[in-house]
Length: 338
Image 1 (cartoon, rainbow, N blue to C red):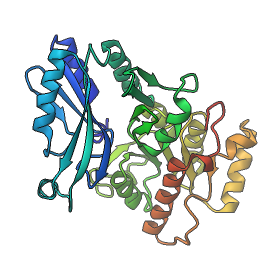
Image 2 (tube, rainbow, N blue to C red; image 1 turned 180 degrees about the vertical axis):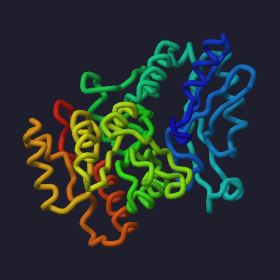
Image 3 (cartoon, one colour; image 1 turned 30 degrees about the horizontal axis):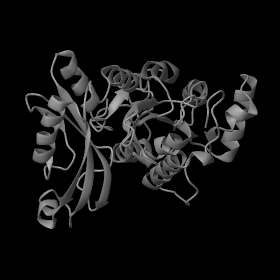
Image 4 (cartoon, helix red, strand yellow; image 1 turned 60 degrees about the horizontal axis):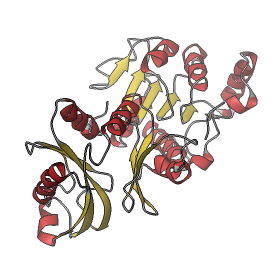
């Protein structure tokens, strides 16, 4: 799991299971230059141990004090803090702002069973939103169209953005983004680096030792298996992008077939229009429909006139970002809601 994907709910649940009193603090609104984004969390137990952050250090002490009171009196509360320019500068910001922090004791506030469900969903790489109404103190999880708040939460899943919908605060818990690059070719070198910078857990797949070498890709995660077997082992879901770069149907096609059988949000394939035309014929012969094949972005990358390998990598990252953040531009996976 990505280091960017925090373990705050998991730690809170571990403390609960160990018989400790626990509170969760969540940034629910910000104004100005806030130290931490909306949705950031801090878990605190009755011994004042904590994990996470809601302000980068500016107001943690006050939040911990309120959390310790909350676990004793069983009452949730919303706190508001002003972050001074001096405090903001100390955590790397140019100026201060204000933040609102929701503090909820587990048990009397957040039901322990709801926390269990949240952690289970995160562990299964299922997108889930934790909803809390700050007026009525109703709480729920939002996972799919069957849930009342899903229409409000769905755009937030795509944007990775927690926030308010009326009186409901929706904390978005998305699985970490992943990218699988098939083909340890020249373009893959800048693409792997760019993927990591953009927040993806990137994996390079190529069974050819001469290509997938530590010398050519120092420090990268590499899987030297046939692509279809590698993708099955890695596991594909709606938070995964797959890019094929080998030009060799023997390597690209098995990966494409595996990706089309999943609900990956992006599948891009290197090759000219003519090359893709031949690819389409092979996929049609394999039984894939026009709608299936329409999910493939080929030639891969945004049309920005890219020529050099690094430029092509930029164009690929641009197209992937658009498909991730603008779901209306994304062809639906077969049997999967767009």
